[in-house]
Image (cartoon, rainbow over all chains, first blue to last red; front, side):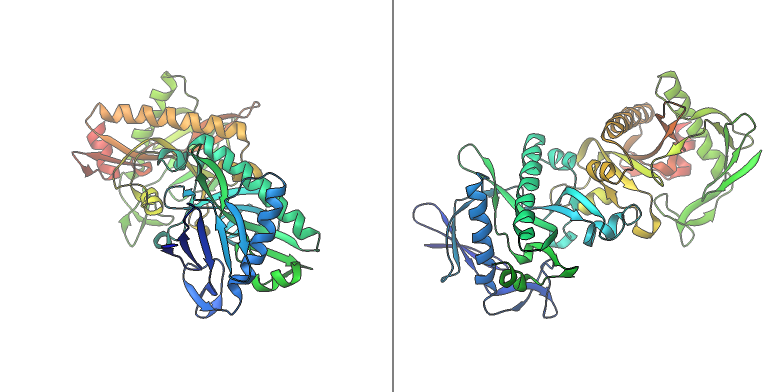
Length: 226
Length: 226
């Protein structure tokens, strides 16, 4: 097992069969000791955070597998806080794809002239560049194509997958009376045919979820949902 | 003649025949007494600035008319610094549409991870919301549609017109050895069929133009070009 990469919240190893092992860490992103899933820096360590994120991720990736939606997931070991995945290549140096069901956060900060806080949005998709130095700017389909990050055909697939997966998570949460406001995903290309698949994780840190109008903290979501 | 609106650089009057009169002012946008076409505040007054902007605008709008590209232009009186236009309704509370031929300015600030300064761009189009409070954020085709500002069909027309007009200005400038880096336009709907047409102005303040690698100030452009 070869160590490949040290991420903010995960370490990555290459396995002998060519798959990769993601080691979920208890480090979470945040600022000044406060957990903030949107932050770009590791803010603190919370005992059990890695395992908690993995439990939700395993749950959702297995639901997606049943529905035939492509992901990089192979299997997970909750005890060891590890997930085995197929190797995937990210787009450019990494993109985040957001699916929005209510106008909050950066959407509202940008488009507040035309949107009211909490206004329903119909699975609105937007892409941002992973670029800490430039505060993860949003980027359009045309710009992704022109800069050689993602072709127009790939954008179409990416958008459809994002809405499909967002809707699956939304419906799953709704079964427990939880409402999904927005969620962010990462995608990559895998295999010889460079199929676009969901990668990384689906956990409390990737989404804004509410119950009875109250925001649910990422770690609380796992307890409430599973 | 009825006064309708006082803008930063123009006053607007309604004429008896239903057309509008734009009075170009010598006020220019800027910060701390320095002319900056991208600024949202009136920074200073420059004798002759209104007439200078109108001269270029008249020139370009008449070229567009010859080419059958729709604008709100009727005629202009350089002496009085006025332009007569057809009434038009803006999209939402106003959009700016940018056409880029080289990666500079806000494009580079956002996408510097994938673009080099001055890199050629193939008439890249982006739309920003006119919203001083939110620093004129960029907005995607999907968001414009979802927020009811611009339909998908209208976006298609808007993008095509933007590239057409951008290319006309680029070619005109090239005849004098001037290179267009980027240009911003405003559009509106006019007439009973709500045709999308170019509105406002085309002058030095709307574009970045270079000669022999050197940026040309807005007022200098008129002298150099006409």
